[in-house]
Length: 447
Ligand code: GDP
Ligand code: IMO
Ligand code: MG
Image (cartoon, rainbow, N blue to C red; front, side):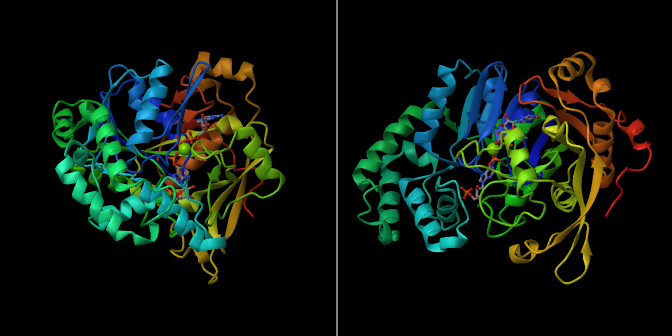
């Protein structure tokens, strides 16, 4: 088993950074395959916290090569800044390779992002404002600039010329640099990154042929995928496992495991339907306890409960073979844990697997809840016991919850995050939840 794709199963921010960092200690390569600086992947190492936006988590591990794959859109100015910050923390330990095929986010894209959000008014998507959508639009419009162009002034110049002509509505904007200045700046930053910009396809094929451990690090997640997410409230790339192929150039048969990463509850940042959102005191408590603020924009995250309809959908879309459940510590002390097991749809039918395609209809579904018994508070004593004894020390009701998730999705839970630190991840050998499955029926029952 050599190539693992880690995919967020919800609306982003599930703790992918935490889990991928944990797995990276064994990996030879980690590869981001889509998105750009809209991502914010947090990793806590001792008392240091790093938030990676464009760098793959493998950069924090000395034996690892961290690759930004062809499916990414890169802000080269932001990237040099990020490299500097991670270096200053003494954590830039791996080797960085940037695919020459990555598209470049330009000042135009950020301005266009803001302009389009303004046009949408009260229906704004709540983007991260990083120019992601417009950069991908220029990619499919065959007008994009790629990292390879930054080494070739004779190619870059005419491409910028075309872009300035194609976007007359941005002409004269005070934040749009003159073309000549942008050309100079791009060539300078291209020169700074030049040693990292390379072809990456054969690098990955060779790694697979050698049986190296390769980790493909998803960003944004399943329900923000451009096709399968809650259109139009989503991002402009494929955060599902299919995107891991087009975004790297690896063929389907090279993937051995698809690890779905989910929170024990749910969050969403930005607009769009969120059927299990908890408004009021429950939502506030989850936000407070879980520290739920956007890692990229600092916006408060909307909070709610685990949604098994969306999770089953994510399992099927991605072909998930394992699950990692994070933030179980945040729910410690809750008397009961609500989980949505199905929806009443607006047309009167029930659904357990497939959400409506229209965001407007998804906003109207009524979750059918089941209430599982809560588990104890994650006190320092409990954390120490888990660190010492491993999964044997997990509270019985939590094992029950994990077993329930596993049974309802048909996918084993193989990892549990119980705190933000690098060490606070537990591996669950296959079968250890079996005993929890035979517990008595859930108190509270379904409603
Ligand atoms: P990502 O985008 O999926 O990598 O997730 P983010 O970094 O945006 O958000 C996850 C947040 O939860 C970060 O603040 C992490 O430090 C934190 N976190 C991750 N795993 C755990 C966990 O198991 N328990 C707790 N309490 N926090 C966690
Ligand atoms: P990670 O990788 C959570 C959301 C934005 C907005 C929508 C579109 O950290 O999980 P965009 O700027 O991509 O055009 O914004 O997508 N969004 C994220 N939400 N986590 C992310 O990344 C996100 N990246 C984008 O809030 O609703
Ligand atoms: Mg994030």
